[in-house]
Image (cartoon, rainbow, N blue to C red; front, side):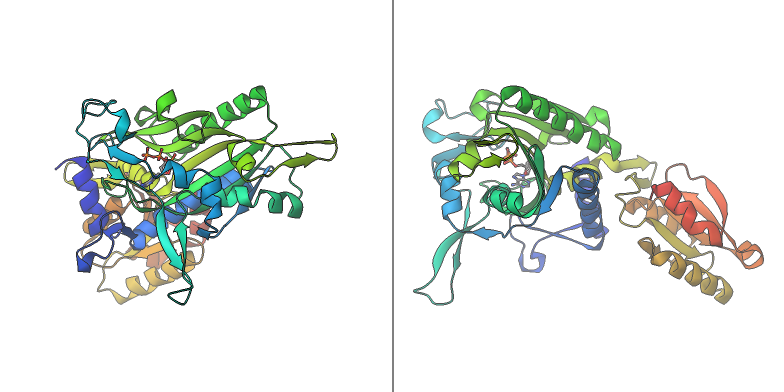
Length: 424
Ligand code: ATP
């Protein structure tokens, strides 16, 4: 089995990711997150929001609607940019205008191409209650436009001043020709984006671009992703999106090759100009259209890459070495023996004590070895065992996932012990 097969099977078996609508045969490009998957995904989003919004003074948040007036997508260039007859490479998934490909092979990697299709990435929906009154709209193809159309609202209703950023997390939809590699290329997916507005000058934009490039790369490393599995890749002129003056991807070394999971884009004034929006600098007495540096991360791809990166095998043991901040459960609590009433009662007490503060797993099945095995496989950083000594001295054993080392900790110090470890 290759690593993708192993991760796909673990994801399903342990409740991280399921095929969407599976009991009806599934639907290509749609995925559901199970009880552990939703935790991992929420933890990634929480860490991102913290680093983008709470840890900074110059960024505010936003949550715009998924369906917008279709005029937004005309102004943004998406209706036009997404309706050419296109072919897509079956191997690297790069798309080309059908009339630009000469020998029927992918110009980038030589792979074979799909048939040309009049191709609109935007997913159409119809809004309205009566058949006659229904209006065509689109599910957003990127979350970005919701930020731009609210640019004036945010400036007028808060105290932000250029340079500043607007952060947003939300779902986006694209009619991808070929979905695949688990959640990597989905038709419904989630993005986390920062649109950072600067004065329109090259020096300022360049400085900001470089700052965010480094900051975003460091964020993944700080959450435990291996440096050697990450790299930057600058876009060549011909592959840049219609809005981008400059673009660099952060790529992960996936089992199916180096793959983009975050884009840093210099969008210039493309969007604000198209929406006829500008910024008044009252102090300096000038008005201009700001430029935008964007960081755009696909959460589903991040979940997949954090899982792949954390996956390790030690003989027949599987360990998900997720950073404790991302791990679905922080702690698991067990009674040493499930049939000793005193131990179960005391373990339940410890479980309830920790539960309000951390997401805690309870497990009383099988023997201790099997429980460690199961918790390692879902990435739980610490396991607490209530044993006979606990009944004498109110202390428990805490076993560390990565080192398998065991500490003896008094029950009344347990919360502090984990809080320290988590740095919260
Ligand atoms: P690709 O070239 O792989 O199609 P893209 O360049 O079109 O991606 P962007 O428009 O820059 O992607 O979107 C920003 C981020 O959103 C991507 O880096 C990726 O993480 C995520 N993303 C885009 N399309 C998808 C998709 N179909 N499924 C999952 N995530 C996606």
